[in-house]
Length: 501
Image (cartoon, rainbow, N blue to C red; front, side, top):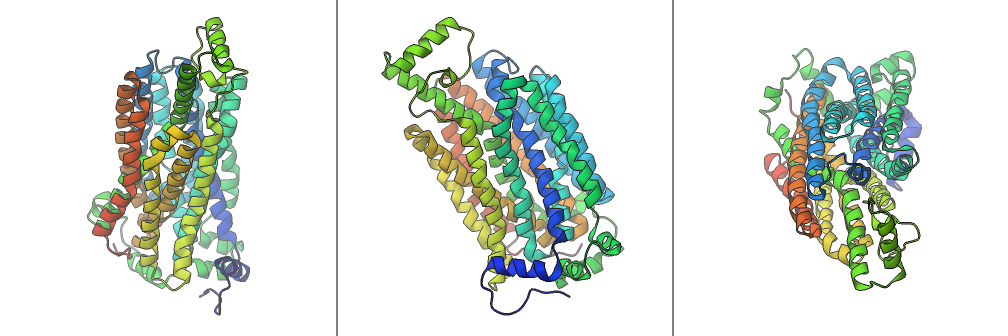
């Protein structure tokens, strides 16, 4: 059995490099494949939120401005209902057919669904394609989590999960940098088509590079040393041996364990926050720009920017876009919201990787794995509290609001890297995808609730001309969710220990 080199450690990075030099690093190639799939997953998922202003102007969500918010939330909910049901099914299917086939078919499905959006031109046709995307994208995280459980020992799983999970941020970074440009140059339909095609290219790499550790060892592409390191958790190997020959575990059996409910509650409470930022952040920032333009024009009716807007809108009465986008107009305090969205997800990438690194640092320092996971999650649950100040700070400067949201999103990704890892900490590998699917379904149900709440709140306050109040209420929910989830998880499962099914 291979273990980490003994002796003093100068740094976590030196230890990491030493292990890879001694035993090989093929498992990181597998992690890179999962990272790429997750990046594509979120690239396809983010297109809708980024094009919301364009689609609203095109009449996809109707013509009434207040009802557009509610209709948009309906489209989001179509995705989330399908995602919830897909999560429940995907985990079970992937545990049954295996990681390689399950992941591939999932990605084929969501790529086709992403392309299909180009053929939807009203709320319900968009809802159909959004549902198709949801049910197929649901396979990503059960397959990814199962892959990491198969290819990494406990001490590296949170770090590997943090790395692949950062693909969600990279997809969210790339999307605002390319999607608005594609839509402007060729029309919004091509934004969906071109991003959907990217996923089909991934399949060539997946089919040529992926196999189980045992198959890779047999083919000579994985060293015996690295294979032994992957299987170096004595308690896990004992649990796996105990489970050999036993039947696959049913959902009903899994629901009898407190560990399943702890993961269920954690995802139900915190996944909706990520959904909210994913689908409403561009709209929030675009709305902040519009509010600042309106306030400036009221305060300075003879300013050159105000006069240019008045001249432009008189000549183009059909114009429904952001006034700050009118050529030659430069309002103080108005920001580039696509750049702001990209920055938020850049910061989130750091959070995802740090979220996986911190518990590894604690474990390498001698801390019990359970305590390291719990302490890390508690730390990450504190940072989203900054978003409580988003609306108030945004009134001063929109970039201040962007900063608080960036911190909250980074904390979510750090939290996510660890909550996913709790599944492989507590369950045998044969049940990892199924439990991940159950938790993912819970998160999607929470996402449905927050989407409808957001739609109703924002419709109400948009009609009153105070949409920022609606966002302020939603930010309170976002800020408190993680501490609440941590307390409930701790109550249900004081220690993340492996169970025998």
